[in-house]
Image 1: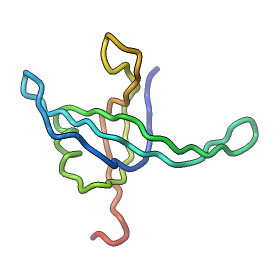
Image 2: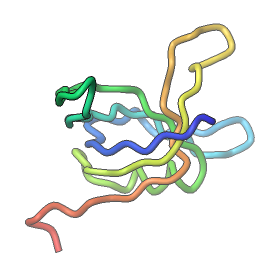
Image 3: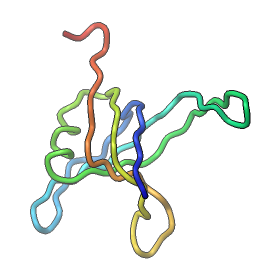
Image 4: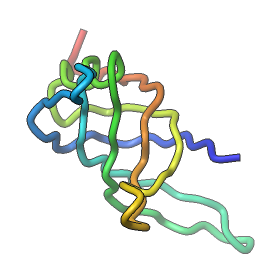
Length: 102
């Protein structure tokens, strides 16, 4: 099984682009900061990762003002068949409004 749920902030996005078949593509950087329980103690996590989405999810992500706090669902996959560099492919995203937004 390859399922991922992750929260963080989209801190950067590339210019919108489209596949040859016309699907919108979102590429951006997600910054995650949090804690996990490991070996009976707490471990602090702080990292950035490349995230990618297509179609309606991509269009929704491009509408967000950056930085945008989100929770995403997706999976991890190699960026291409020629590399083992991993990316997070977003299938669903949920935005979190900041306290000063209505």
